[in-house]
Image (cartoon, rainbow, N blue to C red; front, side):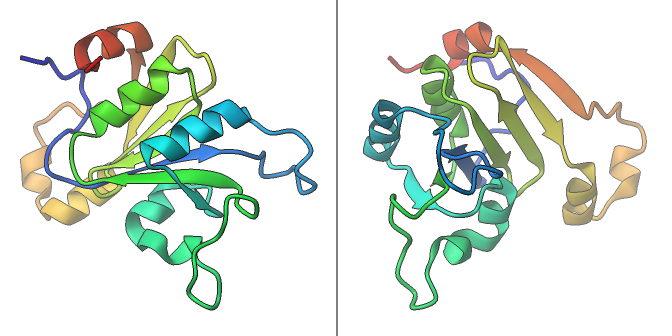
Length: 165
């Protein structure tokens, strides 16, 4: 049985974004990930996007990844890659961590964000308690709970607990 390390992991949705270009690199001169990583991600199922925030994809779906005519943006015109999953986001997280690919994620209907810098020994989770309160509509439920807003999780520990291969 796998032991979860504090991430929300049930039948909810999660979105991931891997930036190809820095937001300020308007000329697209220096890629943040390699062509090999782009190919690996697209083979996994990541799709081109122009939205660089996982929480926007989580809430808005594909709206930010389409042209005005309704067609999807191409890899050449995109700023990043995105991936959506309905449950088991831990498998996607482990896939990215094992390959040291930097990413951001929005999990469980934007209740939690995850950030991983390239090659980091830890990744960071930040819980969005405002959204959690709003969804469950019960301040009474939370009043006696210790709320931890930010958690740092060791990459090697997480991979060891959640890796399929």
